[in-house]
Length: 423
Image (tube, rainbow, N blue to C red):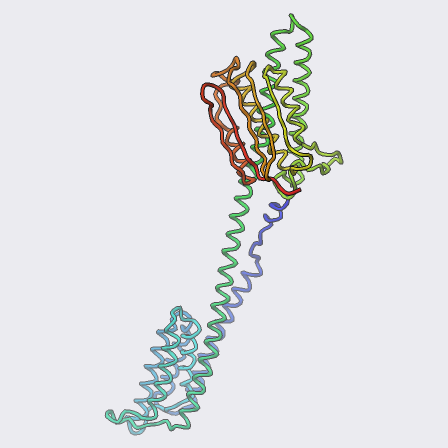
């Protein structure tokens, strides 16, 4: 549970991150405005009748280059064609070509390469600019447009175009990488939250199993002992006294177990967490926690005998062969089985308990003959089956197998196999 508590300290986006995003957007808008002003100032340098108008239209288009890069690129190229026609066809020319404000074409191409969401648009934009500059070396004789770019100037234009394109493509790759990292971080945070929810669910299930095992068994024993003490109180005071002592001892052990669970919750160190459940570490008040081992099976078996069951226990497990978690799991399964026999069969039933460890597997078998005085009725009404669910979850949690069901004739059997650790 301590590990779970640490995981719950999830990173929360801070106000600084939101501020940096707003600051980045403001810087981007300022850059767009600066680029537009540069193009406009370059157009104002020329004396053609339409130079300033063409430059202003190009600058205005560049303000939208981040949201609509493809459209801006197409409009700027169209304005460049209009500039060429106004330069070559009228006499005198109404526009200058090439002109410094044609740098808007490179800015538009850079926007397509950097901001486009399709894979083919960057290459199409670069090819369009290269072909447009190459067309300037041959002109359009059928339209009366003479070449206006020589081979030396073409080399300069192509070199500049390729440099801008490669720079924009590098920025585009970096942006995609940053977006992928952001998406990965977002998914990792979602997965962490999901793991926290699953861990919390497993934690609640483990606590519910512990509470069920402790309370159900203790109450079943105490109810039967109290009934027996009441029936023999006048006839056999000694038997009644023994039953009351068993009730008191069972209640004390139940309270100890409840205190252990509460301490685990309070300290954030659940049995199924980072340490073995039942490990003999110290509690918050400095006292050692109650260590649950296979020896406890004989204790609960003796209480079941005093409640009227005939219990035969055989434990063939070497000393130190099991980890504390495995011993607790085995004990809880046997405890729940005895609880079920007390509830559904009652006094007079016979129970056979077998535990043995072979080839790295702990085998648990509990069989009752169903011959008790309460067979078919049960103590405390109908059972919802939570005990069987809890036992199955315990076994499957450690990678084992579980089987339970009625026997032929009468009675019930429970079989479980748990893989053991190498000690």
